[in-house]
Length: 346
Image (cartoon, rainbow, N blue to C red; front, side, top):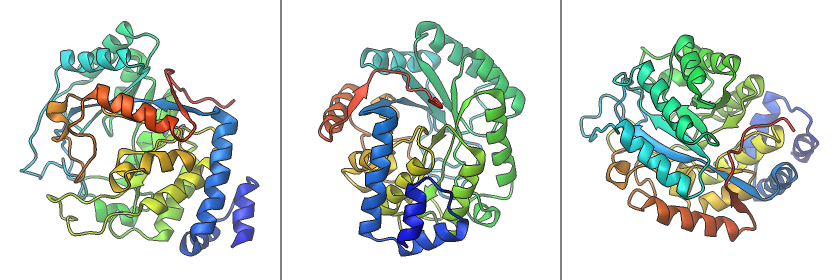
């Protein structure tokens, strides 16, 4: 076991079967060794800086039927909404006044918004806040659509692959969705020039350690600029409502693995992690994360963007969340900075 850990710490590539062995046999002492190393690497590359991205969940309509997701098209109990351009710009205005220099426009795959609508939205945000980065997280699109958004000023794109194993992917998604297309989208995004983010759920239904090792192999191959992982949390209105939630501890372990493997990657401590563990964000940072994504969406719609049950901060005003987060980060010796926080090789 320790020889595998040492190989990893020494930045030597470990084989897939070694990763599986590590996942199956990890314990608290191994978790601590890797977290300490990951935290050291984060400090060496970023100091004590933690970057914040203002999350704006602008639509919960979605054309897809992902089995794990609370806003999938089949959920008749979902209270649907769409934010107007003006409402989105108001979120950015408020966020900018709080020190946010990066905004994430996230939504279901909602065909109500045309490519021109998205281009106009991105262009308008960049025109008003030219020192800010804009990230899109709106799912699978054509190469031409991605290129149009990029030319309008979008800097980053988040598209979690959710699982890199084709058979596991079929267990989580309907037949009209394919892992092949999702991977193709990720490579298209990188080719166009986006700072590209992928990611997966930890502890999703039917997931094995072999699946997780496959996810890590795919990430090594893709070489993304951002990686978003978080524990699976069930939603009461999905077919997986009775499935056990993922593990916060395993998520922290994997954050450390990813930081050690990819020292410069932008790595969030996710809301899902903080939903399972009240100290999840702090523990995520101490395990190697360097990004937080607090919610800038209007309080009136936050509970409606229900990907999973019991999501935190759905009733808090953005100002309240902002101050609380800054104090919590400060308590562990780090500092939220008012910077874009772009990916850099150096």
